Image 1 (spheres, rainbow, N blue to C red):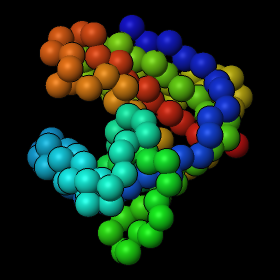
Image 2: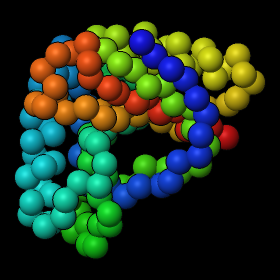
Image 3: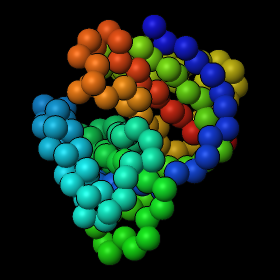
Length: 150
């Protein structure tokens, strides 16, 4: 099940890492990347301020993605990786279900945006609202797909 809406979101600082991969290596990037980011949060002595996300910077071969965890503030990046998820108007799909349904949900959201006469602005991302470690049933996991708008 996927619901769509347009709302205004706040910009959020995040600790991030950048990756280039093909589709075959994508799961490996995610499986290694998120634990490394949470280790980095521990080094910085900051906690997460929102669900982890994957921002899709380039959809191609290679696929270029940014893995991130929102934080309240990043005091001193020291070159290790910090960014800000943009704020402003955004189209958001709230997808409830397994991750294998995210691509179709994202395509449907993009079509919905265009049908409404809106213009995407920048890279889209997926926020993993439900921690899979806490919800073993993939059919109950919640993911938000966010497309920034002009």
